[in-house]
Image (cartoon, rainbow, N blue to C red; front, top):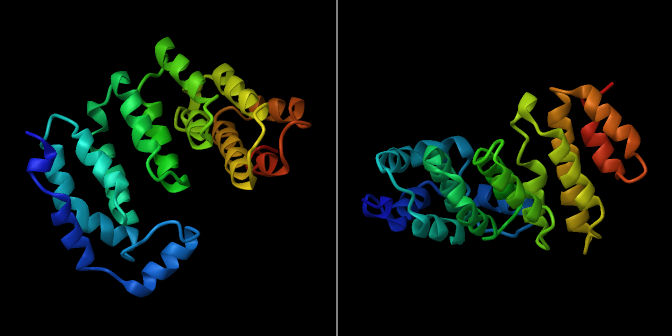
Length: 231
């Protein structure tokens, strides 16, 4: 049974709209550069309101990609966030065959708040799988910088299982790609720094060496982010 048969987006809209906070919505939209509309619901309350819907989703043994596409495409960002929560609740059902479906979701209304959740979901698909690594390397060269950001950050939760050679290759690949604008440069530089910072918690010596040898190619932002836990 499809999840969409258990509840509809209209049901979710009614639930969230009943708790809308217009004043908070303005502040939330401003924080996100007014790129998205918000109901104005803080994350803890949103999670509480979403629980009955997520519970129904967990009862399903399939992923309803059509529903997820509609959730990610919705005007209100809280419903996009619900799409992420729904995806996380069913992440145990995902396989490497779902790679392209996840990339398609990532391309819908992308910004750091969705991309930096999808990257780790994708990262769990194929640890040690050569086919997965090829897909990630292709992604690292994509013209869409948000997709490159996914490639850069997909190992953030790997810790001691991080493939440092793959991480280095992805970073160096992105250092060679000229940024089209300030946003692209900022979000790519930030992603590289963040990926290195996370790995430095496990392997500070490797990150320290990488920063030393690549110092001339890395931005100040990347170095600051990456150096947080490196003496």
